[in-house]
Amino acid sequence: MGCTSVPEVGIPQRLQSTIAELHSLQENLSSGEVSPQLLSDFRAALNRVRNAAWAVQQSAIAGIYEQGAEDLKSFLAAERVRAAYQACRSLQNDLNCEDIEFKKGQLVEMHGLIAELKEQLKNKL
Image (cartoon, rainbow, N blue to C red; front, side, top):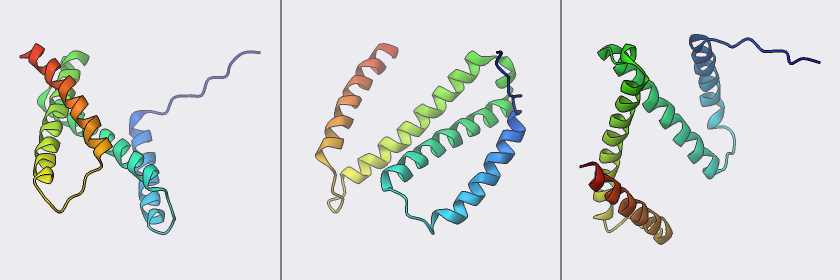
């Protein structure tokens, strides 16, 4: 018994389908109860897709997309650096606000990650 292959749907069709699904989800989201963790995971996934779509769009406009996968990877990495820089600046401002309470565990995890990242960055500079 052989495997039956499902024809792949092209990216434009998948994007149109996803847009329609997101519109439907948007209408239903406020009326239903969803766990905060699930919403957080969903928002993070949407943000990653949004950033990737933006970077691919920008690279296509700049002609990088046609230059190859390595250039596209570099462009996406540069976008992540830009986004991380902005997030770090926002976090820095939040840390200076006395009316914002942070969970110690999250700050410990962030501190550890930043220490590792600092070492990796030192090796790249």
